[in-house]
Image (tube, rainbow, N blue to C red):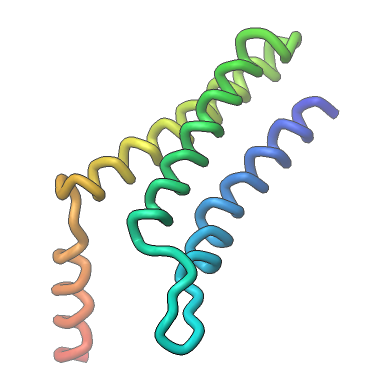
Length: 110
């Protein structure tokens, strides 16, 4: 039951951060946008930090079983990896121009 709660909580947080947050911050009404891009990015970073810290706390103090602790550390790695990728994208270390060029090539040649 504990493993199910760990997985369900982390999946819900990931869905909220990766689907719900962008959908909520990009809503426009006429010429008015609810939140700026930088606000959405800060909220995403904050959510990933909360997910990482929560899994570290659970892995160190709250979860008692060995399998549960391993699961918490795996989720910590997932959240930390996503945080690293988002940070790298925000600072210009990653871009997706290669994907854009690939899709344009497929569009022109197929």
